[in-house]
Length: 71
Image 1 (cartoon, rainbow, N blue to C red):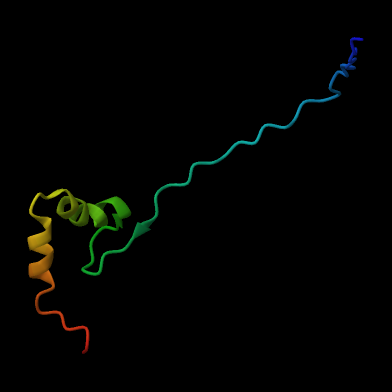
Image 2 (image 1 turned 180 degrees about the horizontal axis):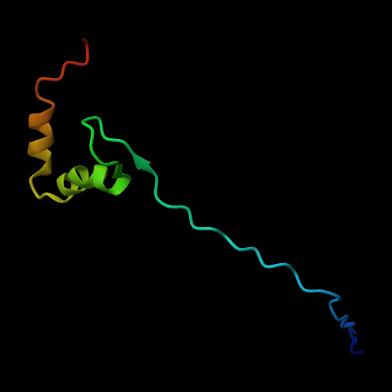
């Protein structure tokens, strides 16, 4: 025996309101040496270049060779 399913289609009385999102600009942080504020992307640029460098392990080792965690 086949079961029949009936679905009632009810027209919507009103549509849902559209939510408009405002774009917020990237945060700007002041520099410590004065001048114009820099974006986060500009501040991260040296780190991004270092991460892409093929000899980054040696460079990082040279940066931290005098670092003593006990001090």
